[in-house]
Length: 246
Image 1 (cartoon, helix red, strand yellow):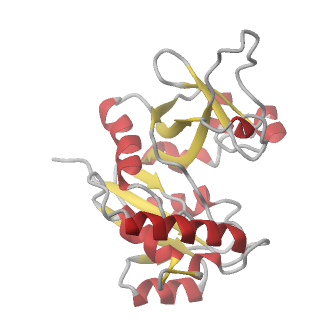
Image 2 (tube, rainbow, N blue to C red):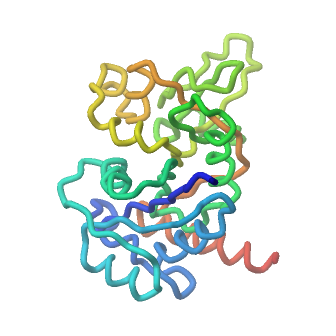
């Protein structure tokens, strides 16, 4: 029997820099609707559901006929919100899809999902993209990742890694899309937070600090989340450009 793979889009209304961003309009639709429609095009997802603790987002999701689950309002992260949905579902693989990336590429979702389908021992997987803009190497808001020969993550950092002593290093940015085996996801929040996660403020380091593998797959998808109204303007320009070239 084929494995059931559930895509979960955590969405909240509260946002310090852009309250209600999930419902901000892009080309006549809420951002969240764009995310849902694109995620629904991924080949390997059996189902896609939105997870929220806000009645406004719940109502909007119902309006564009997306499956939606109400969750507790005390979750410290989107991962915990996804885990609550996973706890009530028997899908064997759970994909955490950011609710503020309206240009998410279905192929990127498939690439990360395939990592767990092909590697039965990996508990989780994510994505990386080669950095083309040198300014991103030193930007602490662009998380970098280094991997070993097997494709597993060695470390994630806000600092430039590796240190380029010979001036010929390649740098990769981390794309924040995660795929988990259900049992691992349900236990993830119970893992102790280590000094590296505390220092970097990067939740994925919790897995590495506790001895778990993270499979990392390459993608050409350029992640662009909407965190501010200015970000929405950039995404709108890219959206219009992508439509004009189709």
